[in-house]
Length: 342
Ligand SMILES: Cc1cc2nc3c(=O)[nH]c(=O)nc-3n(C[C@H](O)[C@H](O)[C@H](O)COP(=O)(O)OP(=O)(O)OC[C@H]3O[C@@H](n4cnc5c(N)ncnc54)[C@H](O)[C@@H]3O)c2cc1C
Image 1 (tube, rainbow, N blue to C red):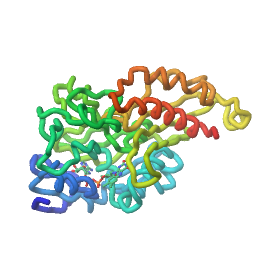
Image 2 (image 1 turned 60 degrees about the vertical axis):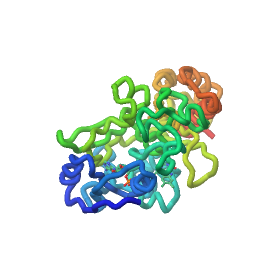
Image 3 (image 1 turned 180 degrees about the vertical axis):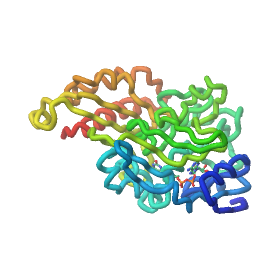
Image 4 (image 1 turned 180 degrees about the horizontal axis):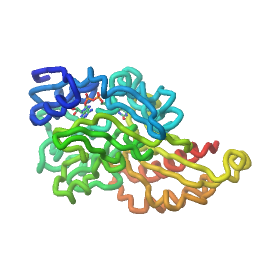
């Protein structure tokens, strides 16, 4: 662990101002940043603690909009009645993340900025193998080595890592907006565009960029439509707790005809949104499926071809072809659960 100077921010504006110095980092719960210092992934000289900023806390409803402060912890969000009622996929994603202890510290602002769990990236310095994220231009050890947990869409030969956040998948499917404050003032970033795949970053001329957050910008909170659609978050992992997703899926579904048709087993989808997690460096909205789903029966055999068609461009690596089938099944399960099917 390296030494760094520590200060407490008095306001969100002063914290954003402090970020103008590239040697300064903000710290919220510290569950990621301190690990990065230990591993040599980050090396800020100065850390500004935003944990005391009351303006970045709180979960409220304003008309049709749910507002969640960046400092809300994953447990606060997952257990909040407003979130459970109007953004159930997000509540579920938060409660399926990490462990109870970590969820008490981990904030939703820091969560979407967590880095990949790729073991080649997460190694302690000095790094014994190439990693373009740690040492740009050195190569990608995962591509030639182990990559069964890596991307099946959006990757490049420079990097095959996935973004592992659970809440980010729910925020993307629920059309949340991140409110950010930076040198140019406040702005919003739609969460379905917040993260970048390696291919998108390369096309933008910054191959190792991971998000659309600009240097010096602070996330102050999120706004999302308070929804009455049925919602679900399905996380596939090797054990039931304290484990990252192999793949995950979030869905929101509105049915034609209401619960009576569901009881009769004749329910059809009126509108649906669905996104996959841990398949790319960003949550992967299945836009083609969303366009096809209205009118589709809420039944596994009807949903499978729609999801398969929407995933036709998946390009798995030699060791992770199984993730295509697993992601398809997660998406189908999330849609069925969101629609209330048993
Ligand atoms: C053992 C373990 C298991 C985990 N399992 C899961 C899991 O299953 N699913 C999952 O989704 N996550 C998981 N996580 C990740 C965890 O949820 C994140 O580490 C946590 O949410 C990060 O929030 P934080 O407040 O601790 O961030 P910090 O560590 O304080 O900060 C992380 C980064 O975000 C920046 N930052 C923080 N807040 C802001 C802000 N408001 N604006 C701008 N920048 C900001 C910091 O400068 C830093 O760069 C796990 C973490 C651990 C340690």
